[in-house]
Structure formats: structure tokens, C-alpha cells
Length: 294
Image 1: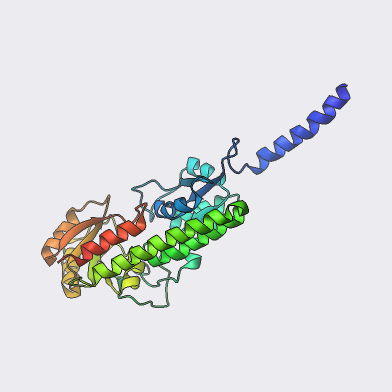
Image 2: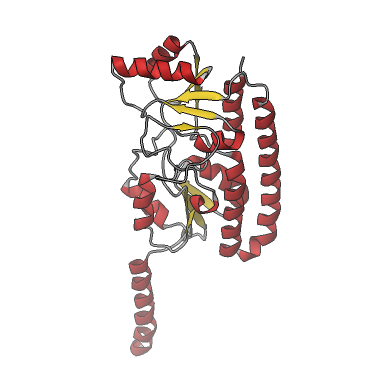
């Protein structure tokens, strides 16, 4: 009897140790998990995966994707996921993908036509709705309703691969989401048709894909969180005047005072935006309203 018990327990212990060594996907209660790097990606994935997967967002709301560093607890949460969805060009995402023990990393940049040149000389970036095929690709691929449609399709394809039984669910949900995004794109286009200027100002060139979609001029004056000298402010004001912009878009969470100084000197107003919003399509409509305001 003792030998029989040993023969049963020993293999079970080996399996348990093997599971601990390789890591476990999901939870003990059977919950299946996915991870995304930033909240706008969650906003696209959630309507597709709700009820079949739980989703973890690595970067907290209000974080700066250019300087964010994931915590150890965030990395552990990611490693429990069956797949990791990333924008594909943000610095902290490389840390995530290097540490991720799973094979399923889905980069949104792989399904979006890139915009080049906006981040080679941050602070001197203009975008007029066309690409210059040189330099680094702009990492802010999610700031576009049209790109969001391609990203949602890629997400649905990966969900179907991970969960074939849910294929009809994902197909129906993608159809509904794509219709909503197409309607939002039409709304944004109609709003901008009445805009007094197709130029807008901001510190960091984070809306390059939106600018490309609608033939806008993005005038990026500098880097987020960095103070300008008096001479730098003068140059920024001159640049703003030359562009014909009517609005200075200020990212939520940043100190608006310096932007207000530049805007006052240039004779433009300021407006707060949130390019890291959960519902990026709704935020893009908000941004186009601000650009189109008379």
C-alpha cells in the first residue's frame, strides 16, 4: 500500500513543481487573462473580450508613456496573461515584452501604416497629413480612429486564435465595434469640415496619426514637462503665429501655465485633451471639436 501511495504522489509532485517553474497562465478558478500596455488599447479590446477574458492595463491612467516604468507587480500580472497587446513603439513596452514569458505578443504598430520623422527631433516636428519615409516611426498609433479599426480587427483575430469556441462572438462584436468606429470617423470628418484652421499646437507630437487622417497640421513646440527659456517661448510664439493655429491642445495632467503663456502671446486659446483616454474615439471627436471651434 505504501508503495502504491508513493507511486501516486511522486508524479503529482513533479507536475506541481514543473507548473511552478514554468509559470501559470490565468487564475486557479479558470479566469482567462489578457494584458494591454495602455488604457486606449483596453478601450478597444474590452468590447471584444468582455465576459470571456479579464484584462489588465499596465500603465495607470494619468501616466506618461514616454517615461513610465512598469512595477514588478505589473510585470507579474502581465505574466499571468495569455496574450499581451502593446502599441509597439513606447519605451516601457520593450521592458514588458522582454520579460513576458508567453509567446503571444501582439503589436498594434504591425497593422498600422507608420508615420515617420515626428520623434527624430522632438520639438521641431510638423505634420501636414503626409509621411516622410525616414527616421523613427511615431509610436502614438492609437490616436487615430482609422488605425483603431485595424487594431480592433487584429485583436479579434488573436482572440479567435486563443479561444476558437468564441469565434462567432468575436466576429459579431468586431462588426459592431467597427460600425461604431466608422461612424465616429465620419463625425470627426464632418466637424473638421467647418474648422477655421487646420493647424493646431501642442507640446509633444502625440497626434500625428490624427493629423494624417484628416489632413491637419500638427505644430509640436517642445517636449512634455520641460520648461522653455524666455527665448524658447518667443520662438514658440512665432511658430504658432506662422502656422495659423487657433488652439493650443494641452495634455491632461500637465501644468498648463507655460502653455497658457505661449497661447496668450500667440493670440490662441488653450484646451485640455486626454490622448490616453479609455475611449479614444470619443476623445478624438472631442479634439476635433476643439480644433474646429471658431
